[in-house]
Image (cartoon, rainbow, N blue to C red; front, side, top):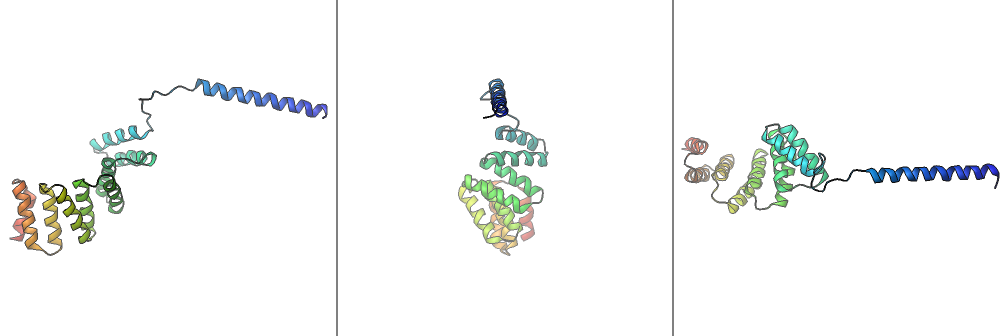
Length: 189
């Protein structure tokens, strides 16, 4: 080995050692994270911020937070349902339906998810699918006036006025102040 090669080998070893020391210094001085303190980028914090935006009526911001949280870690049925709800209200029914279906996979006994899915199917004129989800919702809770009202609206669309009347009557029986159901029943009389 020549003197030049020995010097270069020594220099390389010296720089490698300095890089190693620097990395060790970085690792030693990294602040320890508190286990219960949430980062602004962790899914829990994002959901909290999404809920705050949702409660304040800022649907786009809420959606952005929920989508980011869901991308980092699959969320529970409630968050997925809210994402679907926001998207449906923003006019993106197809994407809303995807989130509603994902929420339903996590909570099959949620009458509100079934109602929301039925609403989209009804809007898309997929009446059989809508009817199936409204029936599922009633099987979960047969004392929800809104479900009977939605079922009545579906039956009107399906050209089944007699059955629709019965659904509106049931909605009014459960909630005597249900003005929309009364109006729809009146139209069918």
